[in-house]
Amino acid sequence: MPDAVIDNEAQHRFEMNTGGDIAVANYQLASGIITFTHTEVPPVLQGRGIASQLVRGALEAARAKRLKVVSRCSFVSDYLAKHPEFNDLVR
Image (cartoon, rainbow, N blue to C red; front, side, top):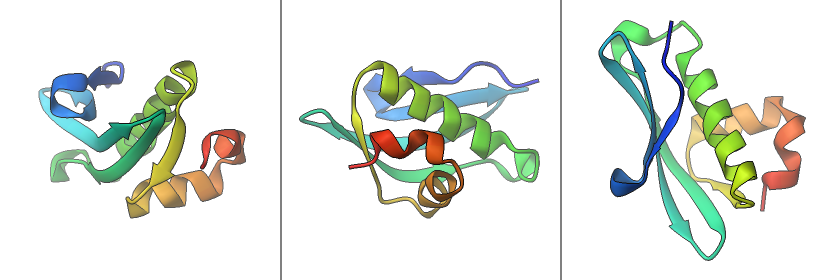
């Protein structure tokens, strides 16, 4: 079972540790906008929905911080297209 999604602000990425393997969603932050640039899941974790859980947690954190979202990551863009409940965040 994966741990919670955490915001590693020092490295500008959201992380989810699953059994010692870490999935990440990198971002840039500027003027109330979070821009997701890349999502990476270790091969051993792929196909288990880890990236979706990570991105959902990252978007929920962005909402809690009242940030608007820009996606430069194809996975995040695809996730947003499939989850209209996050449309209010998209800039």
